[in-house]
Image (cartoon, rainbow, N blue to C red; front, side, top):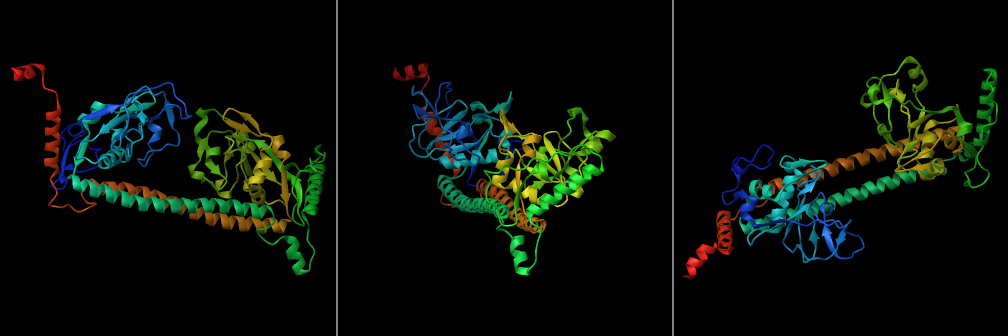
Length: 511
């Protein structure tokens, strides 16, 4: 493999470089290439010397000191201003992250990092941007050696086989300046996108909060007063639900005639006029019912199954993206979902425990997995309204207040769900509020999706800027610049002159 044909995964066409540029190998231009040292004794209290590790280079090729380890100061290698730090060992997709060190920091670095100290005539940022660009394009994934759970690129491999493009030194400086200018603009744009995303998330939370406090749409009490009519209050609605459910049980000869559990008399906030507190137990027509557990061998064909990774509070997968599960007729009947069923996640990490979804008609027929429970609400309860109360912060807190904790996860049981208090407005108000919440959150979700697309585009622009930089298209060439071939020749000559002479030749010279 020649330097001009470094393999199919190298992202730059080396045969089409500007005439004043040259390509060599990293080790031909840079003599000082050294990995750092390992240290099993470390702390995060700032005692000793800072010890940079793979996590201290982020995906943008910048030093990240969010998590910084310190080790005993026992001498050893240090990073100086103008050094370049290359991540030589990591997971395969992260090997090759590179950054330039600016300023005197007195930092040490681990054996998972390689220090490159470029000679005079090679700008550190030019070298760092180039190696990091190779990482961004995935080049190092194909050059690394794979080990158990990680991969690496040895210093010899980096030196002897990774191409290094050299531009005239003055052009290197112009390229670095233009990259940094363009990246600053991109950073400002991405920061703006993140602010919009944060504002949209806050907006979503405020919409849910306003809805659950009766401030999003006019209450039924206000509308009825303006129209000069009476209305069914939430308390009257709850009484009707309980009466109709008892009558249904008695008509079907069922023995479940005990009064459903009511919410506690204290500890709940005051509600708008016409609302009342109820519990899930009072509003449920069917459930809670835990889902279906089957071994992994049963997956692959059959009926679609909803799993916890198939939904969040603000989205759910479509039916054709669900996994399939082999079920018999009895399982399909027992665990089959119907439109407007509400699914609640009962086992998950604390941040996702209690997330819920409303089953859409387009999702059926389907079944649901065991780490969630299904609830079907009585007539007079709008499922979207109940989901709104659970997605709002205080409602989620009420649902998970009695969660059981285990390692890295928590769980709620059917009893916890039955006892969860729910604010119950009049039915008309439930419908109006649900429609307005859905309208506003749908718009917010679309805007968030646009922001995410713009953020991904910004990352593609970042890669495009580097692609232009290292193909000679980012800044114009100046014919007055010293060609890179002359620069490389001088680097080689200075290295040869600094190299110690063999002992026999030195002795002969003395004679």
